[in-house]
Length: 373
Ligand code: GLU
Image 1 (cartoon, rainbow, N blue to C red):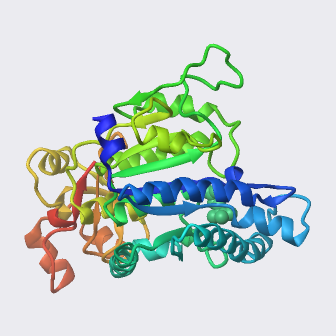
Image 2: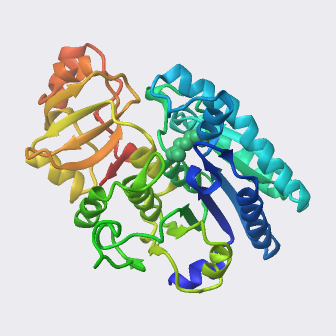
Protein backbone atom coordinates (compact mmCIF):
# COMPACT_ATOMS: atom_id res chain seq x y z
CA UNK A 1 0.00 0.00 0.00
CA UNK A 2 2.86 2.35 0.93
CA UNK A 3 4.55 2.22 -2.47
CA UNK A 4 1.31 2.50 -4.33
CA UNK A 5 0.28 5.64 -2.44
CA UNK A 6 3.70 7.26 -2.73
CA UNK A 7 4.14 6.61 -6.42
CA UNK A 8 0.56 7.25 -7.48
CA UNK A 9 -0.87 9.94 -5.20
CA UNK A 10 -2.07 12.75 -7.39
CA UNK A 11 -2.89 15.48 -4.86
CA UNK A 12 -0.16 16.10 -2.28
CA UNK A 13 0.26 18.49 0.61
CA UNK A 14 3.93 19.15 1.35
CA UNK A 15 4.88 20.84 4.61
CA UNK A 16 8.23 22.56 4.98
CA UNK A 17 9.64 23.49 8.38
CA UNK A 18 11.50 26.76 9.08
CA UNK A 19 14.80 25.02 9.76
CA UNK A 20 14.90 23.70 6.18
CA UNK A 21 14.74 27.08 4.49
CA UNK A 22 16.02 29.60 7.04
CA UNK A 23 18.43 30.04 9.90
CA UNK A 24 17.83 32.29 12.83
CA UNK A 25 20.94 34.41 12.29
CA UNK A 26 20.99 34.63 8.50
CA UNK A 27 17.26 34.47 7.68
CA UNK A 28 15.96 32.81 4.52
CA UNK A 29 18.33 30.63 2.52
CA UNK A 30 17.49 31.24 -1.17
CA UNK A 31 19.51 28.24 -2.37
CA UNK A 32 17.47 25.92 -0.14
CA UNK A 33 14.24 27.43 -1.44
CA UNK A 34 15.41 27.02 -5.03
CA UNK A 35 16.31 23.37 -4.43
CA UNK A 36 12.87 22.73 -2.94
CA UNK A 37 11.14 24.55 -5.81
CA UNK A 38 13.06 22.47 -8.35
CA UNK A 39 11.93 19.23 -6.73
CA UNK A 40 8.32 20.34 -6.40
CA UNK A 41 8.19 21.45 -10.02
CA UNK A 42 9.62 18.06 -11.06
CA UNK A 43 6.67 16.47 -9.23
CA UNK A 44 4.25 18.84 -10.95
CA UNK A 45 5.66 17.68 -14.29
CA UNK A 46 4.80 14.10 -13.32
CA UNK A 47 1.19 15.29 -13.22
CA UNK A 48 0.90 15.72 -9.45
CA UNK A 49 -0.97 18.58 -7.81
CA UNK A 50 0.89 20.17 -4.92
CA UNK A 51 -0.12 22.43 -2.07
CA UNK A 52 2.84 23.76 -0.14
CA UNK A 53 2.47 24.60 3.55
CA UNK A 54 5.49 26.57 4.62
CA UNK A 55 6.86 27.99 7.84
CA UNK A 56 9.66 30.52 7.97
CA UNK A 57 7.87 33.86 8.23
CA UNK A 58 8.78 34.53 11.84
CA UNK A 59 12.39 33.38 11.49
CA UNK A 60 12.81 35.56 8.41
CA UNK A 61 11.23 38.56 10.17
CA UNK A 62 13.47 38.10 13.20
CA UNK A 63 16.54 38.46 11.04
CA UNK A 64 15.17 41.47 9.15
CA UNK A 65 14.17 43.29 12.34
CA UNK A 66 17.58 42.57 13.83
CA UNK A 67 16.16 40.75 16.85
CA UNK A 68 18.69 38.70 18.76
CA UNK A 69 16.30 36.13 20.23
CA UNK A 70 13.05 34.41 19.24
CA UNK A 71 10.33 36.84 20.41
CA UNK A 72 8.11 35.78 23.28
CA UNK A 73 5.94 38.90 23.30
CA UNK A 74 2.97 38.29 20.93
CA UNK A 75 2.93 41.70 19.15
CA UNK A 76 6.66 41.34 18.40
CA UNK A 77 6.14 37.84 17.07
CA UNK A 78 3.31 39.13 14.88
CA UNK A 79 5.38 42.05 13.66
CA UNK A 80 8.17 39.62 12.77
CA UNK A 81 5.66 37.42 10.92
CA UNK A 82 4.33 40.43 8.98
CA UNK A 83 7.81 41.47 7.91
CA UNK A 84 8.87 37.89 7.26
CA UNK A 85 5.82 36.60 5.37
CA UNK A 86 6.26 38.96 2.42
CA UNK A 87 9.97 38.12 2.24
CA UNK A 88 9.15 34.41 2.43
CA UNK A 89 6.60 34.70 -0.35
CA UNK A 90 8.91 36.81 -2.46
CA UNK A 91 11.63 34.16 -2.19
CA UNK A 92 9.20 31.45 -3.33
CA UNK A 93 7.77 33.68 -6.06
CA UNK A 94 11.24 34.21 -7.54
CA UNK A 95 12.27 30.58 -7.25
CA UNK A 96 9.09 29.25 -8.88
CA UNK A 97 8.91 31.94 -11.54
CA UNK A 98 12.30 30.93 -12.85
CA UNK A 99 10.86 27.44 -13.34
CA UNK A 100 7.66 28.68 -14.95
CA UNK A 101 5.45 27.63 -12.05
CA UNK A 102 2.73 30.04 -10.87
CA UNK A 103 2.14 30.36 -7.14
CA UNK A 104 -0.45 31.98 -4.86
CA UNK A 105 -0.33 32.99 -1.21
CA UNK A 106 -3.02 31.71 1.17
CA UNK A 107 -2.98 32.68 4.85
CA UNK A 108 -5.34 30.77 7.15
CA UNK A 109 -6.32 30.75 10.81
CA UNK A 110 -8.25 28.16 12.80
CA UNK A 111 -11.32 30.38 12.45
CA UNK A 112 -11.29 29.94 8.69
CA UNK A 113 -11.45 26.19 9.16
CA UNK A 114 -13.85 26.05 12.12
CA UNK A 115 -16.59 27.97 10.31
CA UNK A 116 -18.16 25.53 7.86
CA UNK A 117 -18.92 28.21 5.26
CA UNK A 118 -15.39 29.60 5.36
CA UNK A 119 -14.02 26.04 5.29
CA UNK A 120 -15.95 25.30 2.10
CA UNK A 121 -14.99 28.66 0.64
CA UNK A 122 -11.30 28.03 1.29
CA UNK A 123 -11.71 24.63 -0.35
CA UNK A 124 -13.17 26.24 -3.48
CA UNK A 125 -10.36 28.77 -3.71
CA UNK A 126 -7.68 26.13 -3.32
CA UNK A 127 -9.17 23.71 -5.83
CA UNK A 128 -9.73 26.55 -8.30
CA UNK A 129 -6.05 27.50 -8.02
CA UNK A 130 -5.07 23.87 -8.64
CA UNK A 131 -7.35 23.90 -11.67
CA UNK A 132 -5.33 26.82 -13.04
CA UNK A 133 -2.12 24.85 -12.49
CA UNK A 134 -1.10 27.28 -9.74
CA UNK A 135 0.61 26.00 -6.59
CA UNK A 136 -0.98 27.39 -3.40
CA UNK A 137 1.64 28.38 -0.80
CA UNK A 138 0.00 28.34 2.60
CA UNK A 139 0.97 29.58 6.06
CA UNK A 140 -0.87 30.43 9.21
CA UNK A 141 -2.01 34.08 9.26
CA UNK A 142 0.32 34.75 12.19
CA UNK A 143 -0.08 38.52 12.09
CA UNK A 144 -3.71 38.42 13.23
CA UNK A 145 -3.99 35.01 14.90
CA UNK A 146 -4.23 35.27 18.66
CA UNK A 147 -4.25 32.02 20.63
CA UNK A 148 -7.99 31.36 20.44
CA UNK A 149 -8.03 31.36 16.67
CA UNK A 150 -4.61 29.87 15.96
CA UNK A 151 -4.01 26.43 14.55
CA UNK A 152 -0.72 26.84 16.39
CA UNK A 153 1.75 24.80 14.41
CA UNK A 154 2.18 24.18 10.73
CA UNK A 155 2.20 20.37 11.05
CA UNK A 156 -1.43 20.59 12.15
CA UNK A 157 -2.17 23.26 9.58
CA UNK A 158 -0.82 20.97 6.85
CA UNK A 159 -3.03 18.09 8.07
CA UNK A 160 -6.05 20.41 8.05
CA UNK A 161 -5.21 21.50 4.51
CA UNK A 162 -4.92 17.85 3.44
CA UNK A 163 -8.47 17.27 4.69
CA UNK A 164 -9.69 20.51 3.23
CA UNK A 165 -8.69 19.53 -0.30
CA UNK A 166 -9.07 15.74 0.01
CA UNK A 167 -5.37 15.11 -0.61
CA UNK A 168 -4.12 11.56 -1.01
CA UNK A 169 -0.79 12.15 0.67
CA UNK A 170 0.68 14.47 3.30
CA UNK A 171 4.45 14.85 3.36
CA UNK A 172 6.07 16.53 6.34
CA UNK A 173 9.58 17.58 5.45
CA UNK A 174 11.78 18.03 8.47
CA UNK A 175 15.43 18.05 9.47
CA UNK A 176 15.19 14.50 10.86
CA UNK A 177 15.02 11.20 8.97
CA UNK A 178 11.65 10.24 10.37
CA UNK A 179 10.27 8.66 13.53
CA UNK A 180 12.73 6.68 15.64
CA UNK A 181 12.22 4.05 18.33
CA UNK A 182 13.81 6.55 20.77
CA UNK A 183 15.50 9.93 20.54
CA UNK A 184 18.46 9.24 18.22
CA UNK A 185 20.49 12.11 19.68
CA UNK A 186 20.43 10.55 23.10
CA UNK A 187 20.08 6.86 22.41
CA UNK A 188 22.59 5.36 19.99
CA UNK A 189 20.56 2.16 19.65
CA UNK A 190 17.54 4.07 18.30
CA UNK A 191 16.40 2.90 14.88
CA UNK A 192 14.21 4.49 12.23
CA UNK A 193 10.66 3.14 12.01
CA UNK A 194 9.90 2.87 8.27
CA UNK A 195 6.22 2.01 8.55
CA UNK A 196 3.57 2.79 11.14
CA UNK A 197 0.19 1.11 10.72
CA UNK A 198 -1.33 2.54 13.84
CA UNK A 199 -0.38 5.56 15.93
CA UNK A 200 -0.72 4.09 19.39
CA UNK A 201 -0.55 5.92 22.71
CA UNK A 202 2.78 4.21 23.37
CA UNK A 203 4.26 5.52 20.13
CA UNK A 204 3.02 9.02 20.92
CA UNK A 205 4.46 8.79 24.44
CA UNK A 206 7.90 7.81 23.18
CA UNK A 207 7.84 10.58 20.60
CA UNK A 208 6.83 12.95 23.36
CA UNK A 209 10.15 12.47 25.09
CA UNK A 210 12.21 13.36 22.04
CA UNK A 211 12.12 17.11 22.24
CA UNK A 212 15.44 17.96 20.65
CA UNK A 213 14.09 18.70 17.21
CA UNK A 214 14.09 22.18 15.66
CA UNK A 215 11.02 24.30 14.97
CA UNK A 216 7.73 24.95 16.71
CA UNK A 217 6.51 21.42 17.02
CA UNK A 218 9.03 18.61 17.14
CA UNK A 219 7.86 15.01 16.82
CA UNK A 220 4.77 15.53 18.96
CA UNK A 221 3.01 17.86 16.54
CA UNK A 222 4.11 15.69 13.60
CA UNK A 223 2.51 12.61 15.12
CA UNK A 224 -0.63 14.55 15.96
CA UNK A 225 -0.81 15.73 12.36
CA UNK A 226 -0.22 12.19 11.09
CA UNK A 227 -3.04 10.91 13.30
CA UNK A 228 -5.43 13.57 12.08
CA UNK A 229 -4.63 12.90 8.43
CA UNK A 230 -4.47 9.08 8.52
CA UNK A 231 -7.77 8.85 10.39
CA UNK A 232 -9.35 10.60 7.45
CA UNK A 233 -7.66 8.23 5.02
CA UNK A 234 -4.69 10.39 4.03
CA UNK A 235 -1.34 8.56 4.00
CA UNK A 236 1.35 10.58 5.78
CA UNK A 237 5.11 10.61 5.49
CA UNK A 238 7.82 12.24 7.59
CA UNK A 239 10.94 12.71 5.51
CA UNK A 240 14.28 14.45 5.75
CA UNK A 241 13.92 17.57 3.61
CA UNK A 242 17.53 18.61 4.03
CA UNK A 243 18.78 15.90 1.66
CA UNK A 244 18.56 17.08 -1.95
CA UNK A 245 16.65 14.64 -4.14
CA UNK A 246 15.25 12.51 -1.32
CA UNK A 247 11.70 13.75 -1.82
CA UNK A 248 11.74 12.73 -5.48
CA UNK A 249 13.37 9.39 -4.69
CA UNK A 250 10.89 8.60 -1.94
CA UNK A 251 7.96 9.34 -4.21
CA UNK A 252 9.42 6.97 -6.77
CA UNK A 253 9.51 4.16 -4.26
CA UNK A 254 12.93 4.41 -2.60
CA UNK A 255 12.82 3.37 1.04
CA UNK A 256 13.17 6.51 3.21
CA UNK A 257 11.51 8.30 6.10
CA UNK A 258 8.52 7.04 8.07
CA UNK A 259 5.25 6.26 6.35
CA UNK A 260 1.98 6.23 8.28
CA UNK A 261 -0.65 4.05 6.62
CA UNK A 262 -4.03 5.67 6.09
CA UNK A 263 -6.99 4.19 7.95
CA UNK A 264 -9.97 3.17 5.86
CA UNK A 265 -12.00 6.33 5.41
CA UNK A 266 -14.97 5.88 7.72
CA UNK A 267 -15.98 9.48 8.32
CA UNK A 268 -17.30 11.82 5.69
CA UNK A 269 -15.72 15.25 5.39
CA UNK A 270 -18.26 16.95 7.63
CA UNK A 271 -17.97 14.41 10.45
CA UNK A 272 -14.21 14.53 10.26
CA UNK A 273 -14.43 18.29 10.49
CA UNK A 274 -16.53 17.94 13.67
CA UNK A 275 -14.13 15.42 15.17
CA UNK A 276 -10.79 16.95 14.26
CA UNK A 277 -11.11 20.58 13.22
CA UNK A 278 -13.59 21.97 15.73
CA UNK A 279 -12.49 22.65 19.28
CA UNK A 280 -14.73 21.41 22.09
CA UNK A 281 -16.32 24.18 24.15
CA UNK A 282 -17.56 21.83 26.86
CA UNK A 283 -17.97 18.30 28.06
CA UNK A 284 -20.91 16.06 28.86
CA UNK A 285 -20.64 13.13 31.25
CA UNK A 286 -23.05 10.39 30.16
CA UNK A 287 -24.68 7.53 32.04
CA UNK A 288 -23.91 3.95 30.91
CA UNK A 289 -27.23 3.62 29.09
CA UNK A 290 -26.51 6.68 26.96
CA UNK A 291 -22.97 5.48 26.25
CA UNK A 292 -24.38 2.18 24.99
CA UNK A 293 -27.08 3.92 22.93
CA UNK A 294 -24.47 6.09 21.20
CA UNK A 295 -21.72 3.54 20.70
CA UNK A 296 -23.61 0.31 20.02
CA UNK A 297 -26.95 1.44 18.72
CA UNK A 298 -26.13 4.55 16.68
CA UNK A 299 -28.65 6.69 18.56
CA UNK A 300 -28.81 10.43 19.18
CA UNK A 301 -27.95 11.76 22.62
CA UNK A 302 -31.02 12.67 24.69
CA UNK A 303 -30.88 15.00 27.71
CA UNK A 304 -32.01 12.09 29.91
CA UNK A 305 -28.63 10.35 29.48
CA UNK A 306 -26.57 13.36 30.62
CA UNK A 307 -25.23 13.25 34.16
CA UNK A 308 -23.03 16.35 34.19
CA UNK A 309 -22.56 19.42 31.99
CA UNK A 310 -19.14 21.12 31.91
CA UNK A 311 -18.19 24.39 30.22
CA UNK A 312 -19.99 27.39 28.76
CA UNK A 313 -21.43 26.93 25.31
CA UNK A 314 -24.21 27.98 22.95
CA UNK A 315 -26.28 25.90 20.51
CA UNK A 316 -24.11 24.71 17.62
CA UNK A 317 -20.88 24.49 19.62
CA UNK A 318 -18.84 21.29 19.63
CA UNK A 319 -18.72 19.20 22.83
CA UNK A 320 -17.02 16.02 23.87
CA UNK A 321 -18.99 13.24 25.53
CA UNK A 322 -17.24 11.13 28.15
CA UNK A 323 -18.26 8.09 30.19
CA UNK A 324 -18.18 7.92 33.99
CA UNK A 325 -14.41 7.19 33.90
CA UNK A 326 -13.71 10.29 31.84
CA UNK A 327 -12.97 8.31 28.66
CA UNK A 328 -13.87 10.30 25.54
CA UNK A 329 -16.44 8.42 23.52
CA UNK A 330 -17.96 10.95 21.15
CA UNK A 331 -17.92 14.50 19.89
CA UNK A 332 -20.81 16.43 18.42
CA UNK A 333 -22.67 19.69 17.89
CA UNK A 334 -25.02 20.50 20.73
CA UNK A 335 -28.61 21.78 20.29
CA UNK A 336 -28.87 23.64 23.63
CA UNK A 337 -26.85 26.20 25.56
CA UNK A 338 -24.93 25.06 28.64
CA UNK A 339 -27.38 26.96 30.80
CA UNK A 340 -30.43 25.19 29.33
CA UNK A 341 -28.76 21.80 29.32
CA UNK A 342 -27.97 22.12 33.06
CA UNK A 343 -31.69 22.57 33.69
CA UNK A 344 -32.82 19.59 31.65
CA UNK A 345 -30.00 17.08 32.15
CA UNK A 346 -31.31 13.73 33.34
CA UNK A 347 -34.90 14.66 32.41
CA UNK A 348 -37.25 12.63 30.23
CA UNK A 349 -38.51 14.24 27.03
CA UNK A 350 -42.02 14.66 28.45
CA UNK A 351 -40.73 16.59 31.48
CA UNK A 352 -38.49 18.85 29.40
CA UNK A 353 -41.50 20.39 27.68
CA UNK A 354 -42.83 21.40 31.10
CA UNK A 355 -39.49 22.85 32.21
CA UNK A 356 -38.70 24.81 29.05
CA UNK A 357 -42.22 25.74 27.96
CA UNK A 358 -41.47 25.11 24.34
CA UNK A 359 -38.91 22.78 22.85
CA UNK A 360 -37.33 22.89 19.43
CA UNK A 361 -35.24 19.77 19.78
CA UNK A 362 -35.69 16.46 21.48
CA UNK A 363 -32.02 15.49 21.18
CA UNK A 364 -29.14 17.18 22.99
CA UNK A 365 -26.94 16.07 20.09
CA UNK A 366 -28.52 14.62 16.96
CA UNK A 367 -26.76 11.55 15.57
CA UNK A 368 -26.18 13.36 12.23
CA UNK A 369 -23.98 15.79 14.17
CA UNK A 370 -22.34 13.15 16.34
CA UNK A 371 -19.06 11.30 15.80
CA UNK A 372 -18.10 8.24 17.84
CA UNK A 373 -14.38 8.43 18.61
N1 GLU B 1 3.77 30.03 10.93
C1 GLU B 1 5.07 30.12 11.52
C2 GLU B 1 6.03 30.84 10.58
O1 GLU B 1 5.83 30.88 9.41
C3 GLU B 1 5.67 28.76 11.85
C4 GLU B 1 4.82 27.83 12.64
C5 GLU B 1 5.46 26.42 12.67
O2 GLU B 1 6.61 26.27 12.32
O3 GLU B 1 4.78 25.47 13.05
O4 GLU B 1 7.02 31.36 10.99
